[in-house]
Image (cartoon, rainbow, N blue to C red; front, side, top):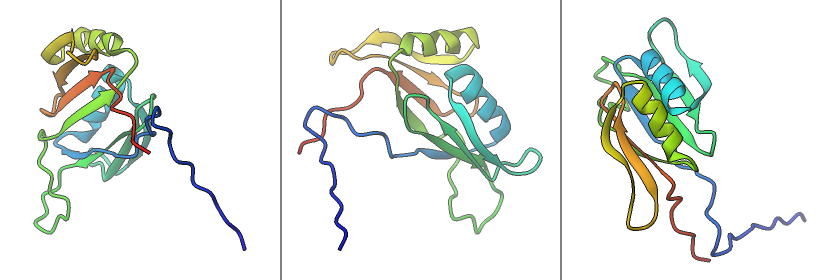
Length: 145
């Protein structure tokens, strides 16, 4: 008989991200370029032909990532997410660097870089599709044992 043990995180650790926001785009190829070139995501997988993207996975270098695809004009679509309706918080050790890249690219800054009452340095920005992104240093609270 084989047994396995599961590690229980201590109360001072934050688990690796396992929630992947997913959204649709009018111009998924341009969105991918923006997220990679401006925010710093890494293009891991892109499936589709021509301008259509069936599925893309973009990894965040510090953990987690997002998935996206082209909006579909199909009444039987099982994932009818509307472009421009996503709101995502991304944890980063260097929000100032992401902010600087976003400003340099002419992105619409919705909330300037500031420090919150919890001590997180963060800002919010809108991507070309209209989605809202917040980048900040707040990693979430440690899980309870």
